[in-house]
Image 1 (cartoon, one colour):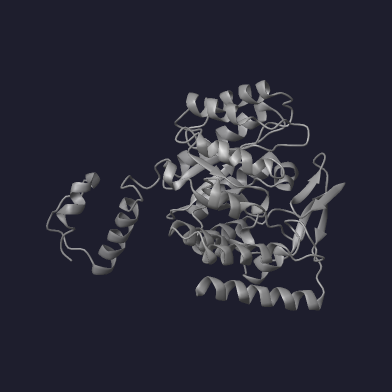
Image 2: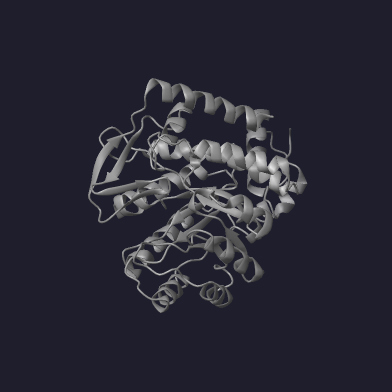
Length: 382
């Protein structure tokens, strides 16, 4: 190959078609890098702020991997991001689970942001980073760092997710905090409607008002009202489109099927990264227009994976076995609140004090999880 094609030069890359010879191997490598730069879902340059249509689908929250001494395994975090992306999920989130928000230091979060961005280089996955805080000032500090990470990694599609600051007590407090966030954020922000037991749930009217005021960044919602109220609010959010761009399910996808079929739901945010292949397949089935049995079967497989009763529960329970089996995690070690309440929906506690725990499984439980792992892979492959 003596010359790079003039069509590539026309892509504003300022490649002059001079008569210099280059080795075929290096030419192909250069061409591959150029194509990676130019191939976009919307024809824009890779690294552009995610478009509304890219902010759809399953966005699993990555579980934080730890080393045996309780320090964060940043290499494991990179492996997890790559695995979720290669499983077919359009987005990935870190660090948004209750224990990660509370039990990681700001410095650990910042280092993790950088590790995630490094792992996302050259990929189309939307990397969504959590900007949360005990107060508005801390939330803004973290959001500002996310923007700095985005500047250092212009080739990465990056978004933000934020829950109400821990100290808000009224809807007016939430509105003020998220108006302040709009002054810092330069990319899509997913609103998480649940913060802590002490923070109020923002009304649909507030979410719509903020999206109208800041249309370039707001209009994405992870709906987390408890019980059937989540279904009703999902319908309200969908009725507010196009101001509301994407309404996503939460709470582990407990009501995702009804929300997909009947409520205009367009995604899921859940700390179920261990089951990313099934999440991705379920979304592909939905996007094909299917609303019948194949969608039901995919959802049933997802729920089967989530609902192994009497196994070590919580989002950092037996699902860690899948990540360890996949070679993503080195172990099943977790930070846990010193005084914790573990449920199928996650770990809940107060403060930042933690203890180290390891998920222990019986041989019989491991054999059953091995069978479920095979079932998952066979289901995805068919």
